[in-house]
Image 1: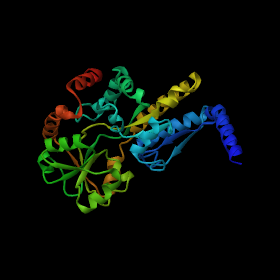
Image 2: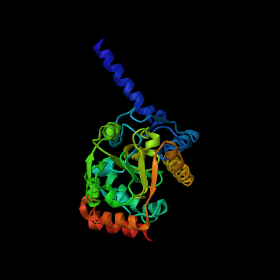
Image 3: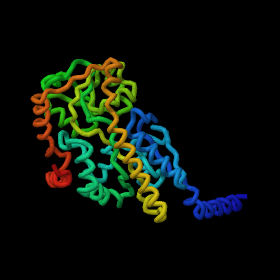
Image 4: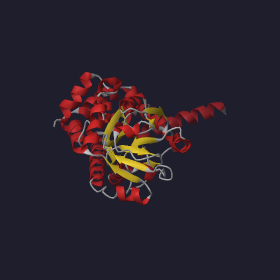
Length: 325
């Protein structure tokens, strides 16, 4: 009996080795609610999967958290267990931190300049040159909304001095350095713990695009937003390099075309995001616009963090040359 089970398992594995690639489903792990109106990340993922399904490659979306957290998804992608994941910019930084150029505060003047750096300036190719030997490829950089601003639970922020009594949620140490440059403090909190942190006073606010508290139901306790436009609000779509490089030429052309379609859908969506501020106001969030003088103070303080370990001087020069003016 044991021998026959082993023989059956071997035969089944051999069958799958032959038929697996033709039957394989492209799994796409989402990083936001499936909201085509509010989530630019979902707009990208949905356009990508729809294009694949319409062109002979079966693809399915998996809800945020269904396949694990960001780190687990990254591991699955790098091991070839998951084809595509919508992920934060920082997730491939354990391999190489060149992608952090997209997080430099007040460095890009909009998504058009980001695209110029990535595609015309060759930075996406440079990023993937470092990542693909470790099994990960960045398929695209997607916008999740208008520029990143300052949310908090306590009071309006009209100048940098208004930050002094706010302890801000940080993604990592580099963001803590940015808060220090602004004259305030930060504490690293995982995204899953953010609602509790904001409600208990562990953190008083966070940096995010204006759509985020609407998507994740934070407007019950987030009451103030400053439209500081610190960085473009970006995420990435990463893919398994084993999967991508193992595609036939025709399949790879289909995937590349799906990426192009998803990029276009995402940028078209971004161009029509004028209603977000109205939705924030309706949810009870007070919006503050910075004066030119107040914004200049944030810009100058932020630039002091460019050499604080986020990137090397050489990497900053690469991004500067790639983005142009």
